Amino acid sequence: MTRGATPVGVEGPEQTARWVRRMFARIAPRYDLLNRLLSLGQDRRWRRLTALRVRQWLERPGARALDLCCGTGDLLVFLARVSARTARPDVLLAGCDFCRPMLRLARRKLPEAALLEADALRLPVPDASLDLVTVAFGFRNLADYHAGLAEMRRVLRPGGAAAILEFSQPTGRLLAPLYAWYSRCVLPRVGGWISGDPDAYRYLPESVSRFPGPEELARWMRDAGFRQVGFERFSGGIVALHLGIA
Ligand SMILES: C[S@@+](CC[C@H](N)C(=O)[O-])C[C@H]1O[C@@H](n2cnc3c(N)ncnc32)[C@H](O)[C@@H]1O
Image (cartoon, protein in one colour):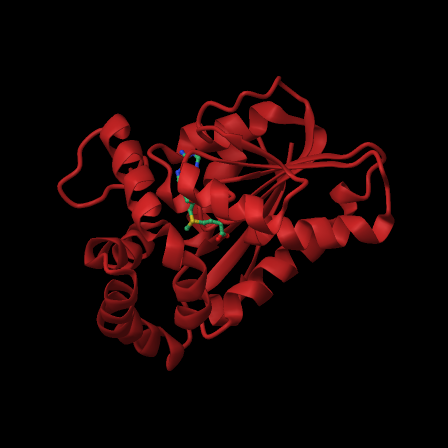
């Protein structure tokens, strides 16, 4: 059974975490640009839809929300927008990531936000203290998926929600082979060229193809104790958003 991210030539959870952190530190300066380019601008829409889907938890009085693996803060920006609509002064929205260069870029976009340098597998957060935990395109990189889900479940209050936005595999007869070709041929070349880090953009499609399908991730969420688990595919299944209630 897949336990976690497995970059080629890297063994064990400690080494995997170190490899992932260093890789994101190297590509941080070009990360946003490449996201926009390689997703043809769709990545912003996926994050916006995610923020809209979790709105009811952001609207709770005194809501506490944490975006894991927040990177440069792009999901946090949309969460903050949705939460601002309720204009509740008592909402706390925070982000965490274990890669300092990514957090520095997040800080530029969100000067006021609470940003923590922390590992998503060992959150410095008490049990049952949050209403919402989100993670966009970070879950796939965890060294241990089951430990990641257990940690999300641990920090959520009863009735709180976990939202996982992650790459998936499109199923359409036309889109599936087109996307496979794009991931194999275009993405590593363009990504490697612009970021100056071919390894990183070889890892990206590899990690997506090794990641479980949405049904399996939903099953893992149920096994971790989440209820009412469901998922929604965006852009023909290129990404999927999973939601589960603690
Ligand atoms: C692909 S980026 C996603 C960033 C952001 N969520 C977004 O939507 O653009 C993955 C991020 O996850 C972070 N990450 C990976 N494993 C982590 C872990 N165990 N704990 C904290 N952050 C982690 C990386 O440092 C990186 O910033």
